[in-house]
Image (cartoon, rainbow, N blue to C red; front, side, top):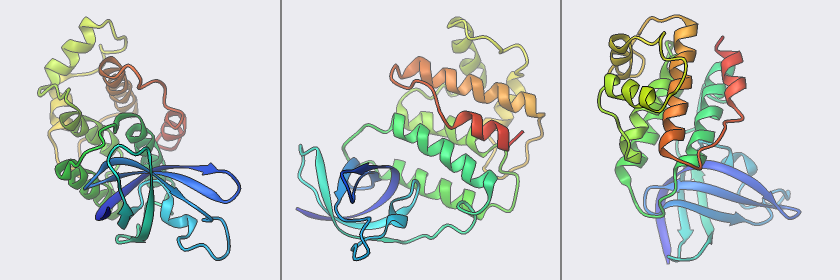
Length: 228
């Protein structure tokens, strides 16, 4: 069946000599893997640049429920990023969040509300004139609502971590945490670098508590170095 859908590229992996396996979160089909043959050749129908993580695509895809790997009929970028590929702070945040999404997006079914959240969040990041240092923290907090373990209150979030014996919580103030998590993207919330790193560590622990397969994040060190 040929299906039209928007999609957000999550990751890609080289397959054989000239092909790619591309994982895309689509508005109509959820998380889906596509094979793109000959993408590395000069005459490729679709260029490699289309399949970089977090690229927003308009797609026509051949989708058959229950099948593991699908094919793309046509693909075009409908929102070219202006800052994310060219600013190291923005690109480091994007790299980190794309790795998180590769670990947590599992459903092979439509969730237009989640797709809209992802779409508008990354468009905001790309357009933001500044104050992006807290974006990844707010994004991770907001994403929990779609994943089924939204804590609701900062105090409940901290309590769950304390019960689990997570270290490093003493320096996190619940009131300041609540102000951060309930602020809009781009709204300035002042905090020191050490506080921000402690909150990020707490959020990662929180994801690991609720998702056994979450594991470690390879891009975390890069993000911390860039935002230090």
